[in-house]
Amino acid sequence: MLGNARFVYNWALDRRIKEYQSEKKSISAFTLMTELTQLKKNPEYEWLKLSVAQSLQQSIVNMDKAFTRFFKQKKGFPKFKSKHKGTHSVGFPQNTKVDFENNKVSVNKIGWIKTKISRTFDGKIKTATIEKKPTGKFFVSITVELPDVKVKQKPISKVNAVGIDTGIKTFATLSDGTEIENPKHLKNSIQRLKVLQRRASKKQKGSSNRKKANLKVALLHEKISNQRLDFLHKTTTAIAKQYNTVACENLNISGMMRNHKLAQSIADLGLGRFYTLMQYKMKEQGGNYLEIGRFEPSSKMCGCGVINKNLKLSDRTWTCESCGSINDRDVLAANNILKFALNPKNKTTDGMSGVACGDVGVSQVDEAGTVSGRSLRP
Image (cartoon, rainbow, N blue to C red; front, side):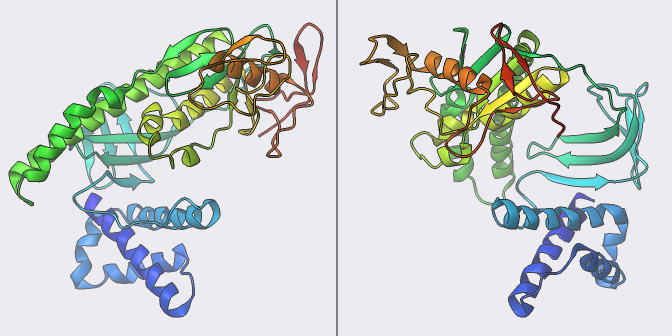
């Protein structure tokens, strides 16, 4: 089934590319699904009938979404899936069942599968997706429809608000002075990873020894990824439980990755995942997630209002020529991020303003530091 889903994805991608090259037209997903039905009637492709029809249709939908992201979000042209590399997945849109007592999951045409269930849930099962990782491990993720539980929104207040500045030297610096060290998961394992990759490259292509060597590389990559995700979950959960309001900076992470000297260190941080986790966890806690524009002078503006335009990335501390105060770059940035986010007249240079995650938007700050706002619905 995994192979069939991969084949249909590549077939649909090839059909769409060739149709555009020859006719300058785009084939819709519905047209491809109709062609797929005719393709399965061909004796040469009879093995496609071993898969669930909806699973093959889901591959076409995934390909169509990849094209949509390419044209609308400029995320990169869709690539053909390899049989020997990457993660392979197959979706099951219907009839998924879970037996928590016996640790089993049932999907169409496969039946009951012994599973190690990570957690239970109580809701209506919608879809299931089975993934095969490069390490040979299989995972099933289940989409569940739960009742809409509204969490009471906490007011935005300076008393229990914090600004967060992220960086390479220190993963996160909070406006209250708290520093979260960068665990550097990839850097700590990079030497071992290079050794394993070198050994794998010297093995004969297609041999069993090469497969074993590649498996060791994949296992180390998986370990690093799990360490990073575990750190991000624990960090964001602790912050969400401690503060009612969190202010962050809207960074251009993809642009930062173009710096080849810092790309590896930035990728090791997992900043995109950090902001995503921070945002939804604040919403779950009834807190507020505020965001300022990426062009605000967070680390360059002193408390007196003077902006140091000559500040370099290597300057970790700097002295203000106007008031003479010595500023720590990261702590100053965290405080300015919080100040800009709570400022009701905050308008960033890129046209963005502070955005609250939840039901309260910033409109006015009183002397006690409490923000009153109009209701904002996503």
